[in-house]
Length: 111
Length: 115
Image 1 (cartoon, each protein chain N blue to C red):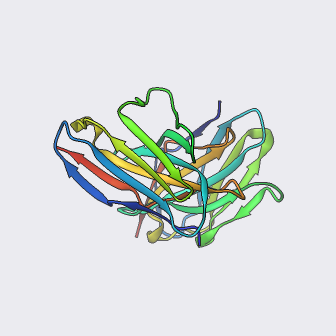
Image 2: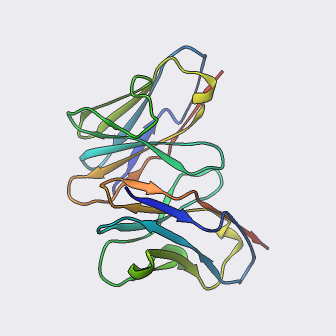
């Protein structure tokens, strides 16, 4: 069975700080990996995804993630966060033909 | 493209009644749809996977007789919460997967409150 773990439950940063949110997955086969964002009061939006090819994936709003197969990781990064990045971030994996979500990381950006 | 809608967006019902939530793929055909629930400030938990024309596959711990799922067409799946109780109050989110790839597109969710 597949599983996803996100290390940081709650992260607080100041504007312009760099961001890295950890995500590790467990699955024995080929996986597709995703990061979703949920802004307060809104529904899920896809930030980026990895299916195959270049392990460094660029998404919307300046986010990127790197798939490191040897570490079973897919960490999310942004070089300079903005107040508007305040949201909940979910890492997700699709291995068994269904998407399973991590517990989420609540990101709070201080203006 | 790839828009998924849910109806209603929110619903309040009395304990003991049943409520139906619809999930539609508006501009594509979805052989598979998924139902998740999200408790406040928590992650999405997969409840079940439904394939068009066949029975849904429920995740461990999800009562199939309580959460009835029907996927009658390639653009519509319904979730019926039967004999609802206050602990069923939650945010229910569906997603749909097109026939041609493995992406899932998520609906906006339905907030259910059982009084």
